[in-house]
Length: 392
Image (cartoon, rainbow, N blue to C red; front, side):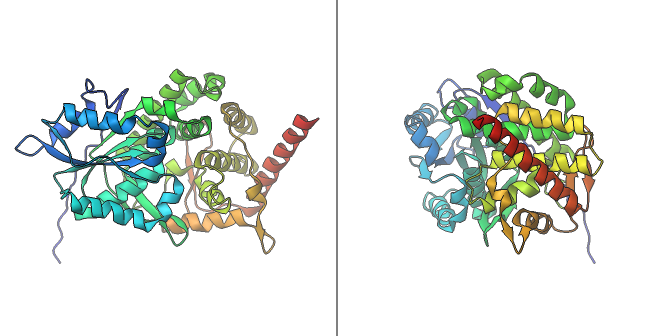
């Protein structure tokens, strides 16, 4: 047997800026210049989430103007290729093929760049297309939502849905760079803007008590979606997510633990059974709430702490219940199937991250079904009580 270690070093870079396509802003230009060929220019294919181009119709012209101003470094091969975004885009394999065809038609090679601009689902799609063409095209992600700027868009995963399951086909691939243009947030409707804040709460709960205290102090302002606290929350959320990816020792998830998926075993299944009428952020808020109350019922977390966190989640503006949770098959809540699907997706043994205290995490390998049902029942009653109070 021949055996040799293959040490690999990746540089994971995330830049924050405003007005990335203002010609005076050199953030994007300088990143591309680092990897330019000998003639000093790099071919670039831009993929654009059509939801963003619809919300910001001047964006396409701004992108073209930026590349024209920096033609000494950036060779834009064509006008931005606009493709559907949103979770449904990950169900359409033809969109992957459209990305491959564009890469082939414009002769984008491993020394060229794909710049993907859009929300988290769109970046998953575009990243998968780029990572599988020529075994990997250099990808620059430009997330356009709070959810993608603070969490998914700064990660190293790409994927599309298959067999009716989220991210069944995908890759781990460190992007060449991530550019978070905070101006994109201004185009978001309130619901989408709020979504990323729950991932900030999540990562604070599992690894950063000081960050959690900031969120707690600024909860009402975050609920009003005030610009400065939202930007601070997204920046610090991104920093925590990148720190975990870079320092956990398992960036490509060879093990069975995924601490950054706290609350997600419920969330992924809830999105599916609600036909994605429940947004990812809303599903994570509910999933975290289930796991927090599960921890109370199993004796892991003090009730007072759980109630404080639930109050923060509500203050920021998230519901703690969805009617989809009431769905049953053969007398059993459908949501419970999320546990086995979560284990299957990770591989190996079931590993669920819970918190025994703010800023700390613990991993468990089994969950008591009765305690889960007790947590669900408590959330249902909480919702019913609040609904009655509003109508009385």
